[in-house]
Image 1 (cartoon, rainbow, N blue to C red):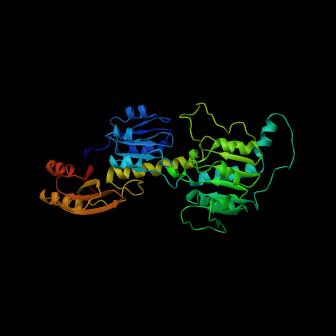
Image 2 (image 1 turned 90 degrees about the horizontal axis):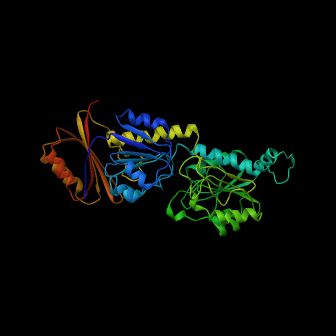
Image 3 (image 1 turned 45 degrees about the vertical axis):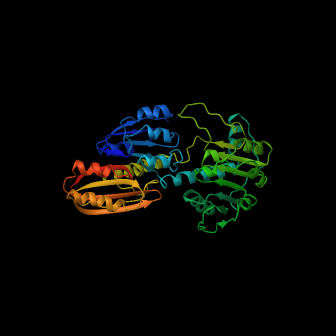
Length: 411
């Protein structure tokens, strides 16, 4: 059933401590903002989404198909992070909910943490630090190395992996990478044809893969066994891609010299909650609470970037860099009213819309249309009042998913 015509957004819910700059930008559009500093479970999320048009979250709150089905007022979701695997994108599209994320803003923060951890593990700084804090002076070079000349294997050569490649090479490391997509090697990095080739030739292996379901469990007993004896392992990507029990076995046995892990299959919902992991208590293992992108600089950039995308969608219907809707970013002619229609991608929809507008004696000043997969998105700027009868007919078209009417625009 088509979703009713949307009214002007008036409420937003921001959870998981989204940077306050986002609340300020949304409030500047006349939206009342509620902020929660923790992740929400499904029942509480549904309850809080009643009457809410905009949801902002990070990685801990799950927006499932069931949640979306019970949130008919929701227009847009902003993921104030890189990944969107916590959101059912197919269901969001079916319900006419636009989803935006921040694919670039915290890249540098994640890379800097990876570099810091590579150096710390290679020099065994955590081991020395633990000994000193217990009153033991253990000056020794045993097991400590320079990173210069060591081989770094990067699994996943996207935005983060490729930038790590550049910084690691500047430190004198020799970089190898493996990616299932065709990626351009930067600097002197060498592409490996298979993951096995990379594992057999890397002193440090760092994972930077995305959250697609196919990556679940991609790194386990077989992959750890294939790594070079004495190698180091880092995961700053997704918790569910690694078998932590297998990683512990290979550190306990001495096959691996250390690890750094920032993401976990099951993460606590709020700061201060208990944390359990197979990796606790291991020497030369750095555990961090999913803070790869959590620098003040990155969080401010993310807050501004995603909030700007949300306000652009709410006020103008712009879908640039949306992860689930066709990308449309039309200029806004003065003196027009904007009709934004998300619909199922089927022949004749655009002609049907134009026939309905013509029947309503509306002058079309501009029209932009795009499709992506199973959906299409058409933004039409008209001069003259949009009569309720015209809107009802657009809303009643068989392929309509959501109709939004944006008020008259004055330059």
